[in-house]
Image 1 (cartoon, rainbow, N blue to C red):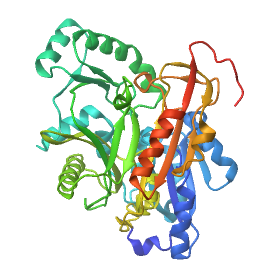
Image 2: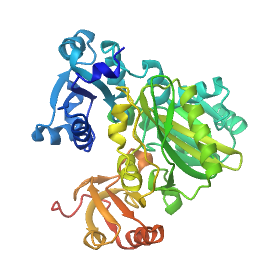
Image 3: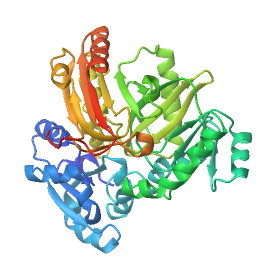
Image 4: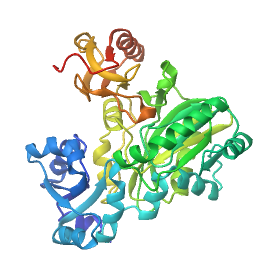
Length: 441
């Protein structure tokens, strides 16, 4: 396999699907340090190009070469990859919805450091993830079962094995899509019918992993955190500081999307050590290597439990870790695949947060209030506008995404929290049940 000495003469990073926006700056930093030019090649499935909005926007910048490939054809993949083989430094997949293509690509880059196709499968299918952690004896799972039909017997089996409260979720989707909490039988019946009706469509639309299945889990009560880590080709795990996650339910939504992510946390060192141990055990149980891992955990009265694991960076983690600790998360994701040791600083620069804003009801975005005021806040860094006026707004549990994302930083934690409170009070999405009245931005 390629050693780092060979990597000194290699100059191409291959990105499967679509690059994150900060990838170009991250690789420029690497190029400047080693005094060499780094090329970026993006390889994407021909059938997905129209839906990969990021690629369509970035193509105009001419910062990368785009290869359009038929990932259902091994010969087509080989035709495109073989001319690059001797120049490839590393290969990465930065979003979970392109993992299926990454798995198909791996056999064609046998001399690069990659995860195994099996570990990617285990880490992107929640059913397989649970079963592998159980098999490893990790004791990190809540009670769970797979639902194959939604009849009365299934309801009785769920009540006997799991009990209330519980969570109904799809096996191969990210972003809290189609996740529903249930506290009694009536809610369970409605949730099962709803997910059974929508799972095939949403699974296809969101490029879900594996076969669409319905998973029922014990509802874990506690505080939610996430930890990103880098796993090298020997299984050594480099852990980043935990991020505290506040879900939509904490602010009054009947939904589990990650509303607020904040780091550093106020956890004691002993609690961080226990969370790190749980994250490492989950990564090991799934056989992860040569990858970044995103581990979501729940701190319960019975200890740390795993919500899920992903073979990728967590959402917004590059921005949060960079603002709070000066860590270049995207660069480290590539370094671990070269392989090189990631560059990690845990010296705190300040406190950072990301907020995902969803509509309080479903419909069409008609008006936005308070944006200009928010941009004047001391903690304001930037905003992502994911929807324009007239766009459809849906809850995460129904397959929707956030309308706006806010990024904040402040050296003073209390001032950061104060500005978060100001956003919650002043920023409003006006949602119309019918078609929005205006199409103007």
